[in-house]
Length: 106
Image (cartoon, rainbow, N blue to C red; front, side, top):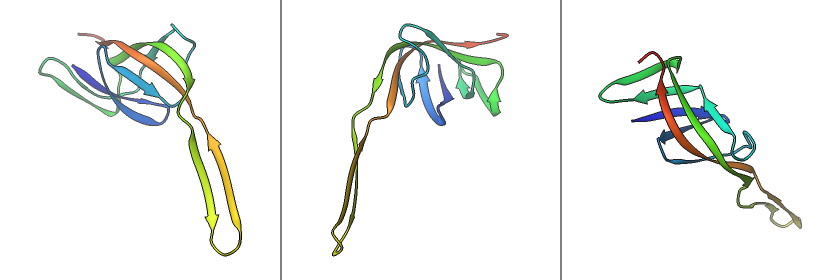
């Protein structure tokens, strides 16, 4: 059983028990998170496709940690004019354990 969910503007393939790294801080640590924007779900031999989302499926997870991702270096350079700019950026990140994919009405 797996599903494809939309979170923070990106799509992720999730299974029960898997870890999901999302590029934003969704909730505090040890809080339950419900993903209701499910695009696709595959259960026991049954395939559900949303147009664009499935109303009968939701994914429940628990936030394990909230922090920041690795630093990304942004370096701009133009030759022959002595132009150099260096910046660093760390994106907020949440690590979520997927606990349950539940099909409502089944």
